[in-house]
Amino acid sequence: MSTTRFTQNIQHRTARLLRSIRAVCLLCATLHAAAHAQSPDRPPMVAPDAELIELSNGHGFVEGPAVNLGGTIFFTDLGNGTINALRDGALSIFRSSRTDAANGLFFDESGRLHACEGGRGRVTRTELDGRVSVLAESFEGVRFNAPNDLVVARDGSVYFTDPYFGSASTQPQPVRGVYRIAPDGAIVRVVDYLDRPNGIALSPDQSTLYVTNDNPAGVGEIHAWDIATDGMLSNEQIFATAAVVMDGMVVDANGTVYATSFVSGRNSSSRGVWVFARDGQTLGLIPTPEQPTNCTLADGTLYITASSRVFSIALDVAQADTAVQSTTWPQIKEMGNH
Image 1: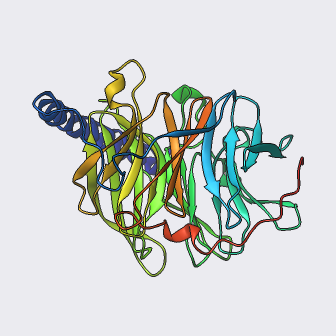
Image 2: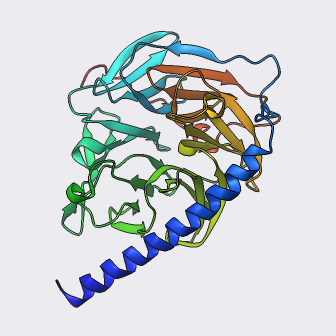
Image 3: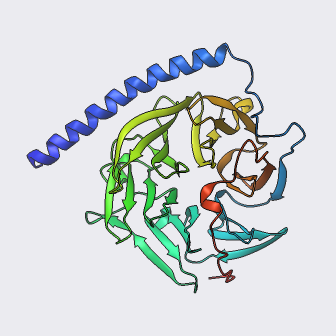
């Protein structure tokens, strides 16, 4: 082993140890607060009479909701290997044979659908004519672990998370990172020290990147970084923590963060979409009957993928404006099976 690689391994192990110690401290503080707190309140942007509406059911395992300007809801079904489209109650398959464990989805401002395809370790873009372009499939000559979720900035940059849920001995990359694909196609690893980066989102002014992280102690963390003009990250902060592991998320135009919670084997009263103010303070919880995986916003409605079902709930747009990225999406051509 080279001296450089040995030094890098020591640095990574030391960083992981320090994060584990910090995670234990966070868990103790979070659990102490939870033990002395009442059940989470209903967030102020959810009207008292608003109900969770089931839009679709009977799927394998759904993820990655995204809504185009025409109002069609796209989501992935990892259990069946498809990207689905749902409009006015009618379900169709948008892509099937080439998705290979597609997870997070996001439309760019041209109406092209980006996808993390973890099974093939790649990030793709479905063009308006139906062609599928591969934007990234390796870094420094090694395939990615399993790209999970992504967000597209207005300048065309794509940020995506690359965790790994298998054995460390089979993990392709040396770290579980966060990457940026520049508009010219250049790929840079912008974060290399998280335990398991998962959900990802941008602030309304696109100056802050948020990433959820699953740490060894089971504490849900949302990390936040400033984004420089060259797309690189700095000034990391822990934006919010909770006594649940957090998954996919979205940010509305007011800077409010909506993060789904993973509570397998835990109290179901913590299951749902946790809502945080722009300063990181907890505003409340939107409960879901099944394990939520991700969420998105469009026209004052929060769409939630949860295990085998897709839900929606109306928000008070005076309290929660529509997500910035959904207001300028053109309507992507819906091409049926591919």
